[in-house]
Image 1: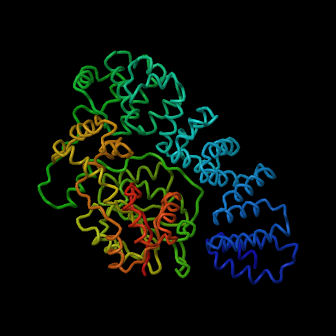
Image 2: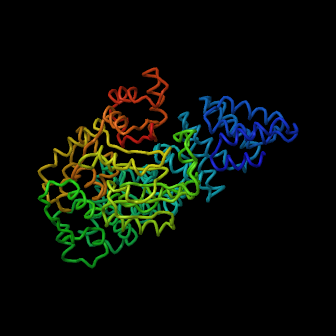
Image 3: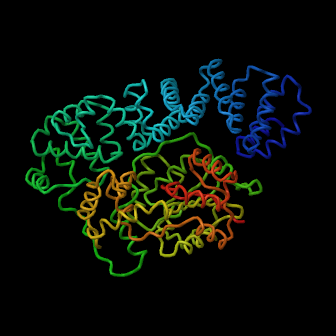
Length: 596
């Protein structure tokens, strides 16, 4: 019976595991009951019953105090109840008693970070990475921390070697490390002085020499987009000096890195006329590879029709989006673990391999992330852009992912795919349609009974800065809009003073690539939502709101404190909170729902 319960837990069926353990425990011998109490606690914790889980873990430890995993689980239950101090104490005891118990390190680091001790969390994860360089949990948690709190690197005692290793790791998305990496470089007063105020780089020759000799700087340039205007401006000035000084042959590593950067950003950086002229005259020089084609192959064709779908298709054929190379791989969680608290207890368990639909997959990054997280699922990813699908298929092959089937299908025709799907993902797509609610409605017949949806929609409140910035460049991007027009529009926004409200668009990673800039600032159609509109759509479609996903825990805590409300599935409460903090959903509303 215990073995059957363990299998149920492994399959993500905590209710079944709990029932089997309750049947087994009365007949278990006291000496053998410690693992059962531990597994019963795990099942309760998976069901959100943290206090009861903690009691079972304590019962397990009373029988066998030496169970390190149970002590670790007790820490998780305490953290779930909000007692971080006690959770951290338990995790530290685990590490003291069993330094080779790897699972304790990333979880302890998360709790330290939740308590604001980001430097201590970073040191712990760097230590864990040295011990277990192939551990996906350690590595992904380290990447997450460096992305969310890049300034922690400034106070870190570690040198640049761990960051170089991460940037070169095929299982890490290098873009998530660029902010931390450049902050680490700026710890050197000499380099910080050469970068200069706002990236003006008054001595580009000395800066080129320094960058050419630094492995971390070269990886940052070649592997990820600049994290801010200062870094882009500094690198573009170095590029200019290398071209106009005819000294580029002395800096081969830097020239290669800048060429890789140009491929990444799609030629987004401004190209002054004198630099363009030098490239035409001496195109064989290696530094010229760091510049876009002066005569681009893409010549936009004007689309006179008011058909939104036709204009969007042309946009994404010209600028497949998003541009990406790698994903940060995480320990597989399987379909049950992925759905976790958002899948209703009464939902039927999929027979065989779960089916997931990604409606509007673009270049396939999100589909690849899902496939990596759920190797037990079959994924169908659809889009109308053949250029985006070619990109998606190439990246999936490069990553060795074989569980995604790509198809050129309009999401309005999702029902034609055959069968139904246990889960549907549609993020960043509906708000680009002429009628977003109609597109959402078209997905409903493809959803299996008891299935779930995760929807991503732009927030009208959070996008006010983007909308205002679009007005500032409207005269430069009159359709048909070519790459030169996009570069000119970027240059105008880059020239804004720091205190201009419109400079807020610099915070978006998309701003630093041409395809990203096109999607962010010159999209053919965008119809953002607010929370009341989401509520109306859910009601009209017969869907129940389950909760927002990927919202910072600090925001949840702030909302509860401000509104004295604990219900995170209360849309009215979220609407009130967003009115006070309009940047809450700056990236997107991302939420789960299911048939009511």
